[in-house]
Image 1 (cartoon, rainbow, N blue to C red):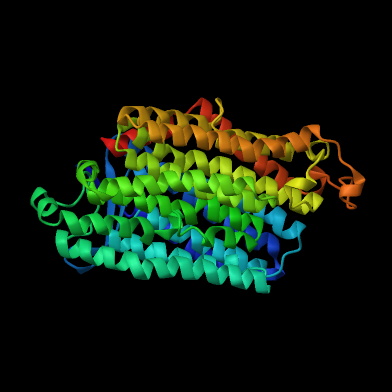
Image 2: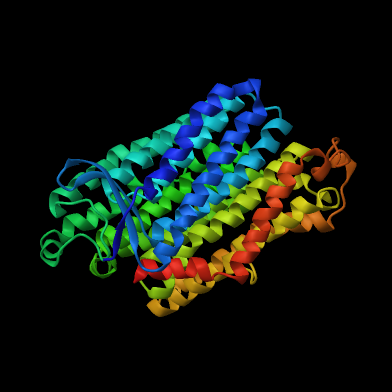
Length: 497
């Protein structure tokens, strides 16, 4: 393995941590300067991540060991193709989300904005730590850290509903980690003698034969221990977290929290167990079934939700399992599809949440049933929403189509008519809960008797240019991801080399 040793992987983790005292010190006295620190940290973070991209595309990896605790247990960082794919999207979207947050938080006169931006910065540091971890121990520390620093964001409104949602969020994620994840990591270390990520997995052939039974159970413990992946039935925290402000929902569902869940599962699939071992492991099919079950059932639940954010939440539950299902297909095209959906889902789903926030701030609309004719008043928002929705459905020219193409090819390679049927049915269900929103916005006439507030005050560009511009950018990037997918596909191919 061609390895370069450099401190560069540590910088994206540290840079937003350094911004936190500056954000707090500036505080409410100078909000422009406070938000400048967030933007500056985001730009530096993305620039450092992007500077490592040519090295990764050349087939090398970058490592940096901070310190060693025990043999095989170190605080160590590693940049490879999978981590780069995740970090590149997350670091770029933090910049976009910061600008969007400025518009949202000011437009809605939210309280505790300094705490909000400080926790946001901490969340991106822990996210980068997960992306660039070189072993399970380091990844676990940052994974758990992300839960703690996002708790105040979920509870931001400090209402009884917000506190209840945040409690559920913490109980699910911390509880799953304590019950399943810690035990899985300890057992892995005891059996393998290391927690370092290795292509092809860390278990030798003799270990696989001797411990096949217990490692089968441990694999399921990883799937559910990383509860941020929201595989049913451990998905309830995600809809509950919708009490948070919309930019937090965008962070949770597109940039950081849920993506760390599916990312960590992919790490276990490719770098702890390995494809060859999973092909003979009995519980692989159980995990594959649960991913397919989650895709289907979450989509059906989304059909029943009138609240826009609730519908998007269950959409996220479903879409996350596309990533896990792709990894567990264990076919080349299927695994490519799962990996690239980390990025394709991020840009489309953050667009949809941005649009939900724009509808709330500019028009005070939170329900699908309130959106009749809204496109005439908010054309930019609904155009962006349409692009994001088409990406989720898998329509050509948008990034989501590329994902579904590879997943369908992967199902055919596996010879699984059931998985093929699940993917096709889920696309129909996606259309079932997204297209009615688009139809209402563009083709149904608004009736004053349905909503006394009306649409007359909704002026997206004039009232909140920060939000309108950022959601337009992410929508355009979703299309670029569909037209020019080579970068993320090449990174995915590097993962599987």
